[in-house]
Length: 194
Image (cartoon, rainbow, N blue to C red; front, side, top):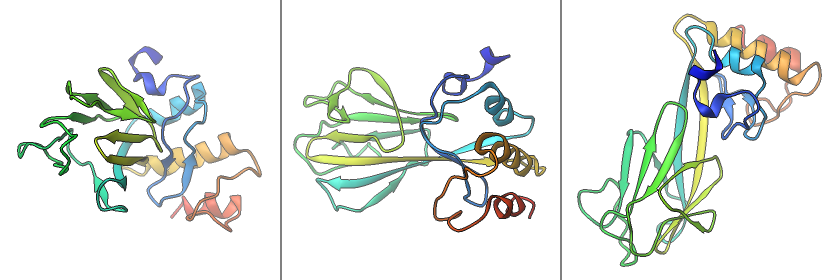
């Protein structure tokens, strides 16, 4: 059964981005090693992961600008045909490509003159991006923010979210973020019943 799952969701792999429920409650942090039970829950019938991809400009442009990647493919380069067109002579006309799939986000250098960098290393070909990676090209630096939410049409996502919290975090170890700060584990589980 595990052979039909994407490589990012095989037992023993580390999660490349956080997964939240529909209310924003953190279920699994980036970097968590997936178990067979977690993978089975995530691939329950009717469950979908909705991947959110945002790039934040930290250098070279209007710092703090957030760019949401909504399309399956997004081109970056000086050409008017590109989706993102930085005004930088060090950026090639079609510099790199970002691909958004159901379970992952990839970046590919398009044979640019000055290269595309991820975490200060020049990439060759296609590379999978993780949450909090930094992309660099020309004078630009962008922080990558990946997040996934569980969704379903029939309420199954809430059941799966409850099971992930109960099985992964045990009785007392609950992930804390803005949505869960100050909530007891019991309150977290009850919030998933709404």
